[in-house]
Length: 309
Image (cartoon, rainbow, N blue to C red):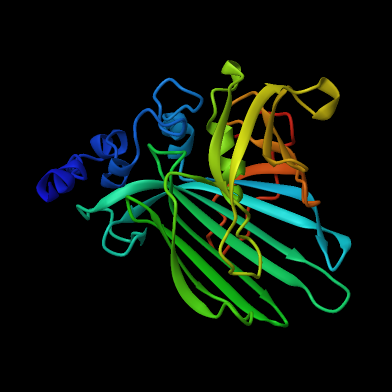
């Protein structure tokens, strides 16, 4: 029985050929049924969404939002940035590789979510980094989330271990401190919805339930609540957004509802977001450029409603 169980976890060997690696499911996928809503071919999600040649140009999509979030009982206004870019990882360190000739390399999509929130006494800084294997846009491969403010630092990391997610954390809060815990897999994470939901086959107007962990972009490291979320898709009202869009409603439970608006045109940028706890996003601009050089990016930007260049 043990041999049978172990054999069931085996996955296809990675090919040295880059194209084959992109198209072949990773060993981590062995723990997910192909009939699950997140991985079903031809289902609610387009599993080839991130394989478009758009992401081969070496540039990052940088979307800036006018944002609000309630801190200390008051709605705070600030800018929120979501960066989406293709990177090459390696298996040994599970980070972006410097050696593209390595045989353990594989492509991922990185999504960075950053903000600095002013308050009356001191600012809050949040950075969440999410990584998805390029051919698995619905299955989180890795996530790190950190918060910094004058009371202290908190850091959380979630790694896909195949049969479950492993979360490690280090928090300044009493009763939390440092530790590890296992989380259910497969499941979505609220932090990942701005990326995962844009890979949906919107035209199907799907309705389904899915396990969903609550927001991790906080200073707390308590065990995250797991919801059985209801996801529903419909066409957005013309007056809701500046361009034709899809409206995706995610009901975590009664009285807890998030709404996301995605552009109809590829790459289906998040145009707007509202959540049950007062977090809002409204797209100000989206650009494609290499943000990592020392020199400043060109001032020219792509206006909302025009094709990305």
